[in-house]
Image (cartoon, rainbow, N blue to C red):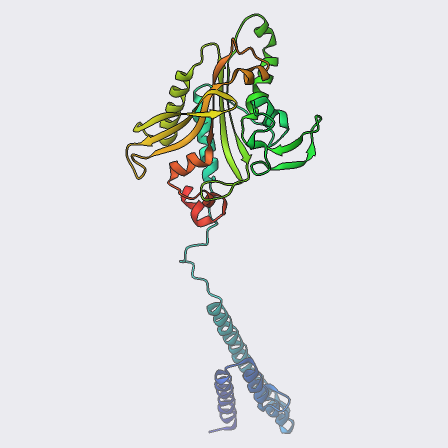
Length: 357
């Protein structure tokens, strides 16, 4: 076997040895160490290049070309191994950070109206279908609208601090403002504005009806399972020429049937006393089916508007007669949704409120 063949076999073995050494490297540092054995300053390829000094010019050309070819093959093997290690590292990272795209996404919770707001809107819709306007008024009231105009005498128990939240501020008559204890002040405010608006018609002998409901927040010093210091009430007022207790019964019965979505209930009017109505009555309802079947449940106070209250509205009680009622929106919502503790509505427990979406 001649020298060129020996040289070719030697270089072929060198390339194979380098490829095997690179293949055994499992980290970039190991690969750099293996590279130094073959391509470093003291590496085997470098030693072969140094050994050509003893060769003739023709042998140097042949030998140099062969060594350079072997060096290129070693560098190609090195580059391939580097890429393989980089690919393996990337794959490990991808596996570590993998996302299971088959898992359902985390969706944002969907909100909904509060059950009190639902009841409020339902009340407005039902009475709106009966021709009632919807009024709104201030929650901080003066003595005239909250008490005096509604026929509450100065010594009435409702005026005491045990029942009323007073504000540290007085009106023009020196009387303290208070958080309204009911929505009834809007009877006076709305009817007074109505009288001014229709002054010409009233002077001509016409009797434009007053028909309005006023839902809103009210405040009293009270707090237990069925009472809250802040609660919601809806006031109803209907004044006209021939409005009677019969209209009150029909109106409220139709409202209850629509609100509770049942024809299977009975209404009862119990004599009572309110300073702003005469005669006055408590309204009870009785369901004929369901968990509350057979029980009488109080839902509203009502009565024929007192003549003095009509005068305080700027209207003639000889011409304007009618009825008023006041119902607790919270109470109606409790009965509609079967809730037995009023405080649940105001605790902000999402588990409870999510049932009403």
